Image (cartoon, rainbow, N blue to C red; front, top):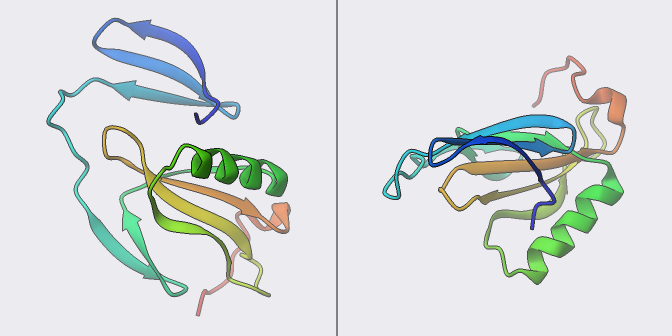
Length: 121
């Protein structure tokens, strides 16, 4: 559903994936594991922490959001635009993967601002 390519694996121990050109290693920790839920307020949203994030193009972001909606994924934070008019303006969405870990998917409206230094107010 996320479009990840499977890589190396050690059966029942870990699995590598290519997540849009970045390595994601998932370790088996048992069926009862769930990531703890904490929240941090960010631009009007209650962002789950900890979380793992990936950055897509704007078109890639919307294509993935539509695919997730078609699979009835429950969003923690629905896809929307935040930090409007600021250097960090971005499309963002949050949801849990099957083990309960929080995923942050974003697309910068100005990609070179991904790591721009500024104070978010």
